Image 1 (cartoon, helix red, strand yellow):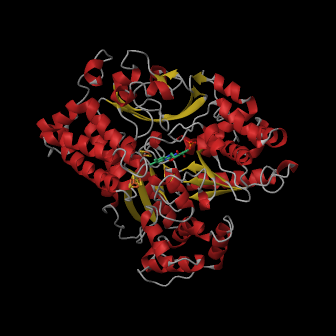
Image 2 (tube, protein in one colour):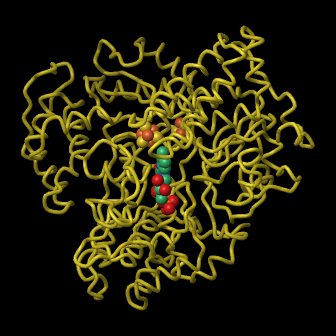
Image 3 (cartoon, chains in turn red, brown):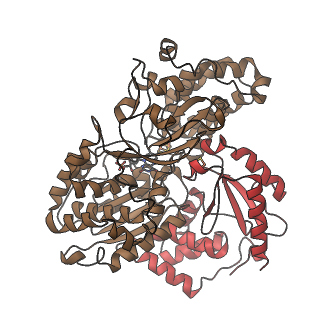
Length: 176
Length: 454
Ligand SMILES: Cc1cc2nc3c(=O)[nH]c(=O)nc-3n(C[C@H](O)[C@H](O)[C@H](O)COP(=O)(O)O)c2cc1C
Ligand code: SF4
Ligand code: FES
């Protein structure tokens, strides 16, 4: 697996045989000739593997699906989940929409910013963390909430204490 | 206690597994539909039930199924809309997390009724855990002979796949969803043609919400007439309401349509009242897109009748004094919440989520966001308030898809009902950044209706 700190914009990418097998499985879900339907799921698989979707990775996906690179770029840039630059190993995506806002999402984002010591979209020096505000995550009754990819695990009813705990758990996990 | 058709077994340990789900009567509707009913009879039963789409628009499901074109030799599709991105709405995620087989069961019956042999469940990409849950449930159902080739020996074949989105609210709009499922940007299509004629891959397609599809199960089990006995008038059956905001007990509740709004908010069976001993100021009853109502108009219509949680009662009074049931995304605001701030937040959301195809939506949401930002931050002018109304009117009805309207309504309704608060932001700019306007007279239990109805 490629690590974030090894990645530069245009580092060449090769997809492993296992990853290609996963792509094949996705493509088999659609009728003949409609393999482009696999694009969104495949970009998720690529991101889970590389931590983001780099331009060379997008070109490779285009080649695999027999579509034009622009068809991949326009999708990757339209949808907010695809990360177009490397992020921390753990990206906190905190919901900032109305229902979460009225139960303290803004304060939690401020707290995370201070605690991690980086602004929205920036990565901590150890490469472990970054954070950003995102729109409603369909968990409005359990706000404030954040999610962490690539499995999009949810952390609900966040408090300063639970954020501290989460950060120290993830640090421990990363050092093992 | 209200009747529960979808969440009856939610607390049974292991109800997410096929085994326990079957013990509780699961998959009976598949046996009945595939072995004893024709597709036409199933559609008829759904029509009789009066079920209305649970995704927001409330269109009768049976009628939608009846419209599906059936040209010879062309594939048809049932696509489940699990995009669930409307702020305030989190019921589908709940249902799929805890009772995934209810959706799979409904998908099998629905696909059979529509003559689909491949069906897709489109979930927002952030629902990766739910995608795993559904894929596991599909594998279990397949192993038990409810999916795949020759289901239950009836000769009917069906494959079911789960498709992730990429994070875009607009993909909840059904034609944007179909574009996304085809691997493209989520730009809504110009209609007609409607998906019933040309949907996925240009083939006839029905798009239904997760909850609508799950509701087909009790309709087939007990009959459409039984289902229609629950509820009031044209609001039949039960509805999942996801309740959030400043409530004592936020969460997902299944209600019989026609429950009073008062009981929903204050009884312990449901939301249990307002959190932290505060007073209710305002309510968004059906997801961020529907008009916001002040407390008094939410509990009582302009005629002074008790308002009910039903399609008709919530929209009583039109947009002047009513709202909509929408997706069932219920948001409660207590006296400490700022309506201007909330309106700005929602408008930022719509601006962020606009696909950008139509100028009124793309530009209008941006302007409204900017104007609301300056009002909230104490730089607003009195004329900004009418400017907002003007921009919202120019968006409404002038766009390809209803996101434009969805962005316009919250702004127009907030100003309609809470104009004082907007004005206060202009007249007290420094105070507005440090404290909230509070309740003013909005929380009066009536009769202030002449003022608010104006
Ligand atoms: C901007 C926008 C977002 C929408 N989001 C959703 C959604 O997340 N889930 C949903 O079921 N319907 C959503 N809808 C409604 C769908 O277009 C469609 O009406 C619905 O899926 C039909 O299913 P139903 O008849 O079972 O409700 C949205 C509509 C618009 C205009
Ligand atoms: S109304 Fe907005 S979201 Fe809908 S098609 Fe037009 S620009 Fe896109
Ligand atoms: S508003 Fe935060 S999850 Fe919906």
